[in-house]
Amino acid sequence: MTADAIQFYHDLLDDSMGQDSQDQLTRQLRKRNLFFGERPLCTVLRPRFLSFAQFRGMQTRVALLLRAFAKIHRAGLESAAFRAQFGLLDWEQELVLHDPGFHSPTPLSRLDAFYTPATGELKFTEYNAETPAAPAYNDQLSNLFYGLPVMGEFMKQYQVRSLPARVGVLHALLDAYYQWLGRRARPNIAIIDWKEVPTYSEFGLFLNYFESQGYNCVIVDPHDVEYRQGKLYAGEGPVDLIYKRVLISELVAEGGLDHPIIRAVREGAVCMVNPFACKMLYKKASLAVLSDERNAGLFDADELDAIAAHIPWTRVVAERHTTFAGQRVDLIPFIQQNRVRLVLKPNDDYGGRGIVLGWTVDDAAWEEALRAALGSHYIVQERINIPWEPYPSLVDDKVVLADRMFDTAPFCFHGAFMASCLTRLSTADLLNVTAGGGSSVPTFIADRR
Picture (spheres, rainbow, N blue to C red):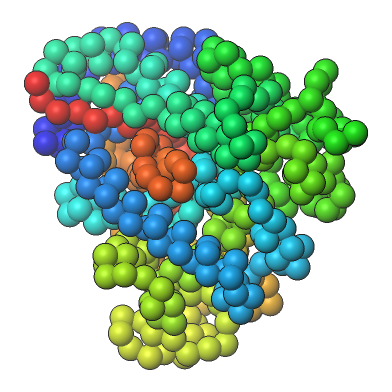
């Protein structure tokens, strides 16, 4: 069904319709400030389409995986030996044990996956459990695409439904705050991150949205907060609830464990989402903990089935024996000998930094990367198939179709369910807008009328 929808959409895009739609896209990107740094977020003329059945199936599998992630998090809190599998630093070990005052360590999160509609294969490669970006970008792109001339023609034949994410962010923030406070009240919200980050424009979108819902909100650089007399101050007034977009590691690097934000949270003066406790699941090793045969006893049959089907083989890089495809292997020699089917990733980084795709380097570079991985905190992960679809863009006043690889990144809320979905496109193997060269598109459910 989605293939039919894609073909119908492309058939509508003659050069004249493409030019009109591109003009509208360009105007609206500018008006809505939909830029990642200096680059427009979207450079193509078609959104991503899913059928309702595809979306519902994905929701079902995500819920099982989130349940499994919650189990390994609880096990990590209860046992220092189990917690060691995540590769936490000493200061992280201290912070993750802090009780945030609400139940879920990940009220807001995003899973990064690759979904191939033709085969139904769905593989999750990372869990953004600390500061998931782009929900407001996603919503604005959805609103923008609804207004394109080509979409107006498309909706004459197809029912189209967007997947809003901002509302989920607000409700997750408020739910955590009510648990922390012990009653319902209207918090003063601070969105906190560095002024220089390329996602800064998204904070303005959230500020406008929160204020439109009747909440006071400010955007604050971590340098510009004060903690005094038992309250955290940002701008002219006190803060009750932090929507944390800055990474915990960056706060610690800047101000140590005495940073005003860290002190205020630890002393119960302010509620922060996501909390320090998310750090365990943010580590890329969390996927190794899920898929390692040593931990299989934690999960029920449905969870084990979901892990086997949707988590690629992942292990922490270390001198040990483990299993691969049911066979016992010596891990380091196995990594050395299987470059073309493996990826090395730093345990704690983002934006594609430090990732080495084995099939893109020679043996000498792979050996060097493996030595570096052994001297640090890294995971190794099995290569997966990356799907692609044709996407139209306007080139020299003509509509051109080009194959783009794409990912599927569900936005998850309350640590329990998927409600929306980010899609990123690329012509390179590493799909990450932060790393450059990518494009985002909104995801719609589309079914024929």
